[in-house]
Image 1 (cartoon, rainbow, N blue to C red):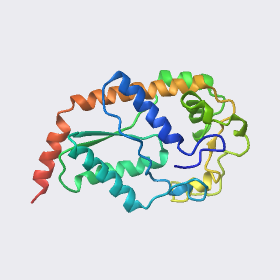
Image 2 (cartoon, rainbow, N blue to C red; image 1 turned 90 degrees about the horizontal axis):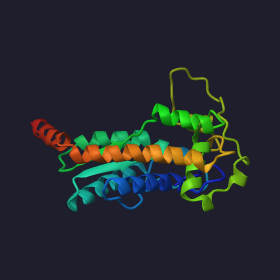
Image 3 (tube, one colour; image 1 turned 30 degrees about the vertical axis):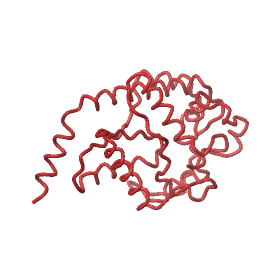
Length: 233
């Protein structure tokens, strides 16, 4: 739950992720759980509309959700994320799965732009910068929920990257704010639904492949159990 420029709703990332899951489930049967909106978003606490929960609560909420899903008989769980601020958090969450034994496996879906899709996106994208509430995310929302997109607001704030630090080979917790104080990265003006459809179709197709891989996977749970046995000295 965070600001997405002046033109998109606060729940844009959750909405986009749900659409990808819906499309994938239509092609490869799976259970799509209700929206999970408790994520890492401390970097946007200076913007109205942000819901930034404590680290302890985020980890516990996600961990207990996975445990409850497992208790209901589902032993393979795929996390589908479209929020950049969650990437490091979810990678860490995967690591702490090794903290104690569990009878289920968690997978983190991480799509990559293939060359053909990137070529199509480049042809329709007039800007070269982006990353948050930009032309692509706005275009995706024009496909999913056009009634919630305010194209007349796309130029009311700047998404230009500011050079307010001079740190070579370094990153800091404040780096996102330093670069994008409006919590808006890129340009959304001129976004069209056709661009959003290209991205959504490509990501959904990759999610279908990921679901198929998880269904066929016999190694993860077996090796995870072996790991826990060997780590219990």
